[in-house]
Amino acid sequence: MNGLYGKNFLKLLDFSKEEIEEFLRIAALLKQYKKKGVPHALAQGKNIALIFEKTSTRTRCAFEVAAADLGMHAVYLDPKSSQIGKKESLPDTAKVLGRMFDAIEYRGFGQEIVEDIARYSGVPTYNGLTNEFHPTQILADFMTIKEKFGSLEDISLCYYGDARYNMGNSLMVGAAKMGMRFTACCPEKYRPDPALVSVCEELAKKSGGEIRFETDPEKGSVGANAVYTDVWVSMGEPQEVWKERIDDLSPYRVTKSVMQNAAKGAVFMHCLPSFHDLGTEIGREIYEKFGLPEMEVSDEVFMSDASVVFDEAENRLHTIKAVIAATLSDGV
Ligand code: CP
Ligand code: NVA
Image (cartoon, rainbow, N blue to C red; front, top):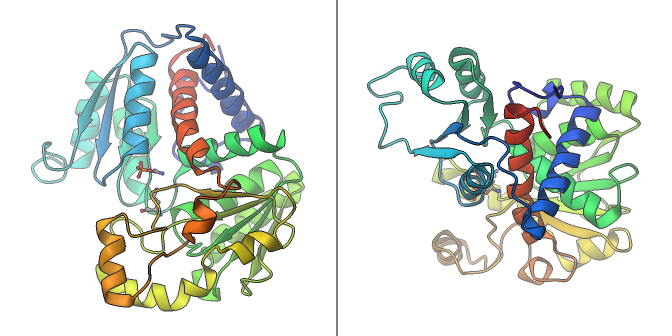
């Protein structure tokens, strides 16, 4: 039986470097199977509940397609069409779902919610994004880095923007686990929680990684193999924070000059969705209000050859499938 069988996937802090490598190995194998048309119904007949309290394109589609490819049935629950939280408490809901499903995915707010679902349901539970962490995204990002550079070791990754939220936190944890150099390039108040930084510094000492902070946007990406950014305002945050974020984070937009300062062959990464042009409703609203035609990344960088954002998006499927397969089937 593989060591990941029956486990939850709630945050990368719960896994060793070797276990994360194992998820990535399985993802690469399943990607090959998918490309070659090799059937891989490794969880035939099992059922997964997908709870989304926030919207999604990639994560929902990746879970649904992964489930179908693995021979499973997926049930999608949005916050409006279920009783969750309104007529039924979370522990009761989790207990009910645990009686019917072999696994549960949750996207929503506090990390404690997904941890509680795991506790009360008793079945493997997967974090599809919380305010604090987005661990399935990191697997896809690391798979993409491995595809581009061959390995994660010696990779230097610089994150620009709000490093206090799910993406900054999770990339820092992932880098610390895997022995990478992680830099958060942001104003001081946008650095991750000091307690999490301390944990990551300890992990980095053991793995040979490094955690750094830089406030100068011209210096952050120097020597970086991967330059990463995310939206300045995350799902669930109030609209009122836009002005402050624009004021504080505009100097940290990933531009051509940021990429030119990076190492030769550096890639641009983003979890998506991204505000890089006026092709979205929110993008147009911000433009009308604040006159910004692009936000966290310039359209030029987003569309450049260095951009691997759609590889990351595709790899969401293969890595999420690996998480389900590894935890529900001992045959991978
Ligand atoms: N990157 C990501 O999680 O995308 P979705 O919000 O579309 O799922
Ligand atoms: N920080 C973003 C990530 C989206 C994938 C959010 O939480 O909205």
